[in-house]
Amino acid sequence: MLLAALLLTAATRPLLMAHYMPWFQAPPVHSQWGWHWTMNVKEPARLVDGVPDVAAHVHPLLGPYDSSDPAVLECQAALMKLAGIDGVFIDWYGNVDCDDYMPNHLAASRFIEVAAGSGLKFSLVYEDRTVPNLIKHGKTTPSTAVQAGNALMRWVDEHWFSRPEYLRLGGKPVFVVFGPEYYKHSAWDQVFAGLKHPPAFFTLDSVQAPGAGTFGWPQPQGGMWQEKLDSYYKRAKAAPVEIAPAFPRFSDFYRDAGVGESNGEIPDAGGKTYTRTLDRALASGSPIIQLITWNDYGEGTVIEPSVEFGFKALEQTQAFRRRLDPSFAYTPEDLRLPVKLLRLRRAGGDARKLDRASALLLRGEVAGARRVLGS
Image (tube, rainbow, N blue to C red; front, side, top):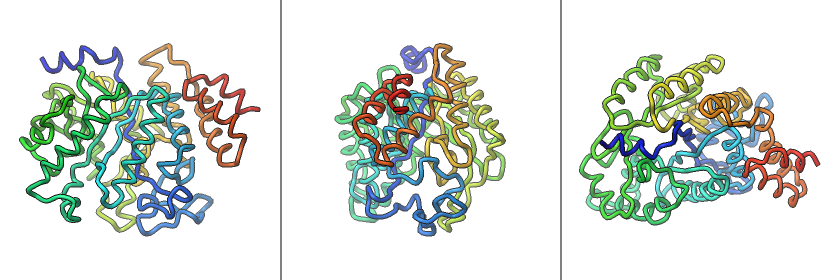
């Protein structure tokens, strides 16, 4: 019954939601480079073989950016829209001032506003593994952690769940946890207690009570990623509903930086990994496909334009969206327009004209935007 209720209001095609990281910090928006560009071993301000020295095997075509930069956010939102992406799953660490959680939260909030203005949906992927760190820094205690989680969810309920742009299934806001790692089973009932908009709750790899469903993630360890994906889909058959994963590759930098063991590799295979995982996700019948990821450079799963792969993943996304919806008409050439807009802004172009081009792009009016940018 739950599955039927959830799918009754789902789109006639699966929604394409990109997993989005709001955690990058860079000058001049911030005073120094953030950890996700440096991992304490890299210097993004210098060039190595012609590209900025960032903590990644895949380098952003936009350059190492700040996730709060309005020019970058409009570029990213326009790229998503023109690629046929319906919205974003925002990787979210909460809104407590601890480590870089608050800058990440503020960047996420800014992107939500830009995304909403361009017709994109949004949802949250909460990282409850942050809770032990909050306890370590005295922001909560083991005895008050569940209460703190409930306070956090009440904030989300008031500020985000109620928004029309928030992703819903069966009328319920979709809330995803990467795990869970800290809150277990009945603790979530307490975390969600008293909400005006109780969520459809999704947990990683399998349904964990009180979850409504599950979602998948690339598992490259041991080179057995395809077998692990098969195993995920077998488990997902027993779930009331799932969020299917699609990804282009996995190229982990964390071991290179000395900050953890390698999670392994998944080859790009000339773009075949992405097309195959998209096809597999579509065949699953899931109402939502999570594109993993828009911009996790540390794991190299990015579909955002990169130095190494160009616009290929977004062009593949366009082709996939066109299979789902033949009326989808944006082209690979259209994808170049948001990047041109960003570069003109950085070069000090006419702000009035560029604002007009931005408004046109975010409405999907590419012909008008092309004329303005060409002027």
